[in-house]
Amino acid sequence: MANRTTVTEFFLLGFSSGPKTRLVLFGIFLVVYSITLTGNVIILMLILLDSQLHTPMYFFLSHLSFVDIWYTSSTVPQLLTNLWTPKKTISFAGCGAEIYLFHGLAITECVLLAVMAYDRFVAICYPLRYTLIMNQRVCIKLAAAAWLCGFLLAMVHAIHTLRMPYCGPNIINHFYCDMLAVLKLVCADTHLNEIIVFVIAVLILVCPFSFILISYIHILIAILKIRSAQGRRKAFSTCASHVTVVALFYGSAMFMYM
Image 1 (tube, rainbow, N blue to C red):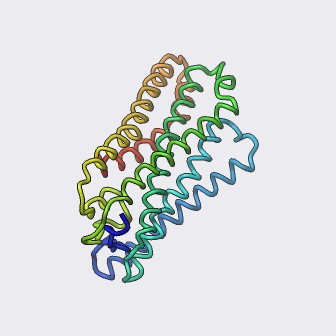
Image 2 (image 1 turned 120 degrees about the vertical axis):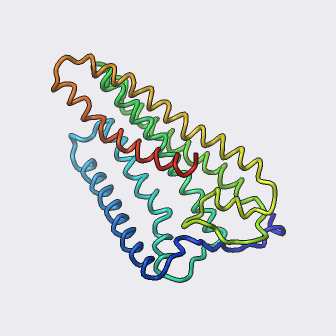
Image 3 (image 1 turned 60 degrees about the horizontal axis):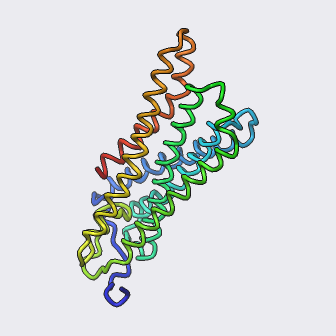
């Protein structure tokens, strides 16, 4: 493979606009990135310092915030560098690391969102057994499974992408090393890689999303059975933020890849 691969670095096309437009985009993405980091760090600190937040829901939320910090950091700093400087290259190894981290953290977030939906399902549908079902050991196992699943599947992605021969153009039509954009530069048959991408996409997008939908159908049925309006509002409020995150995450992912 080393003899067949002549590409040592890639050129990220990114936003091929004028310098003024790139400067405006740099400012916008820098502000959004700073807000994202600050918000997630504050969430982590509050959960760590406030003993009243040491519950399963906030335990999974802390993992989600930690994932989001590194998820955005796996691509945005490279994007900001490309917008600020004329040099838009990334090494072959750096591109591989970006593919691995980006997909590992994305898959972990998918599974974590499904786990959080299960947590809300148990809390609303089985409130009297909630503490028994979602005990500390179960929470740790579910979080560990999300991380393990994410980085094992990402390793399959990265290995099958990087082992392919790259001997032609090295211009990636993206602002980061997106796997599908990188595969377009392979000078060999990528049919097997496309099958792997499809299978893993079904596993990490369709299956968790279907599980979330089923969980919320049961949650909605349980909420409608609550007689008091205040009780229904309280139950809805515990799910609203999670539903918003699911809609934003899966909506953008399906828009990009499906």
